Image (cartoon, rainbow, N blue to C red):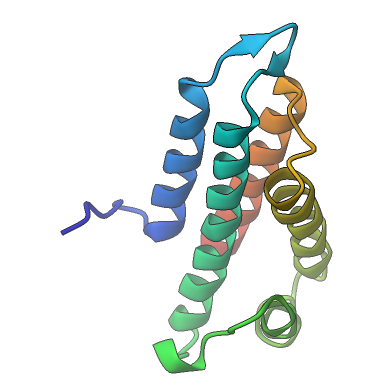
Length: 131
């Protein structure tokens, strides 16, 4: 059985994302091998989805009612989680573009400072959503 994180799965995923980068080699402020960087971005994006799931479950959603697509996550954020904080939806869109598309899917982000900033942004989003 997998070890759970005391604060929830989203935080566990974020720790895993950061751990993937620790062993990655750096040269001239760039990660040399893009594979661990892409994996870290993919895992950080999953952390965001887990955070949204956790927030929705706290609001009474069942596992079956959780979103199944990025559009479903956008709709759920807008309808159930952004009521008092309209920035959440915009932040989710930005994180989707940077983490999932540019970082994971296309593997375009390898600058150490950019990678760390994107992971910090994901962390902030998760904390805002769950605390």
